[in-house]
Amino acid sequence: MIFKAVREGRPYPDHGLTVRQWADIPPRPIRLDQLVTTKRELALDRALAEDSTFYGDLFPHVVEFENTLYLEDGLHRALRAALQQRTSIHARVLVL
Image (cartoon, rainbow, N blue to C red; front, side):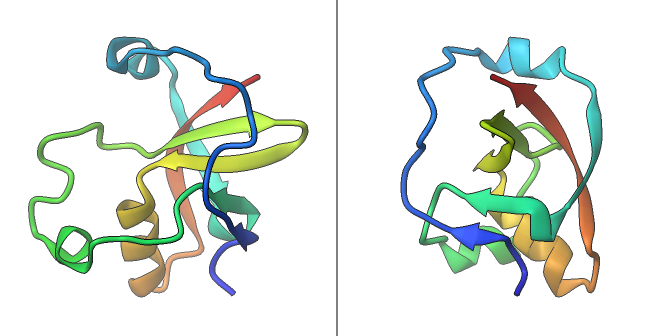
C-alpha cells in the first residue's frame, strides 16, 4: 500500500492559507504510508508530465488534523515518488 488511506474530500475545516503563506512553511520529510489522500482521482498525464512541478509549489501541501496527515495538494508528486521506489517525500505541513 502506498498511502495510509485514500479518501475523497477534506475532513478538516478550511484553513484559508494562500500560496504565499504555504511557502513560509519549511518542508520536512514525510513517509508516504503516513498520508491520507483527499482526492481519489488523478490525471495520469499530469502525473507523468516532465514539467509537473513547473507551475506550482515544489513541495506537496499536507494538513495535520487530529493526528492524521492529509495530502491536500501534490498527489501527483507523491505518486511519482512512489513509482520511483521512494518511501518518503518532503512536504510543507500545516498543523491545525
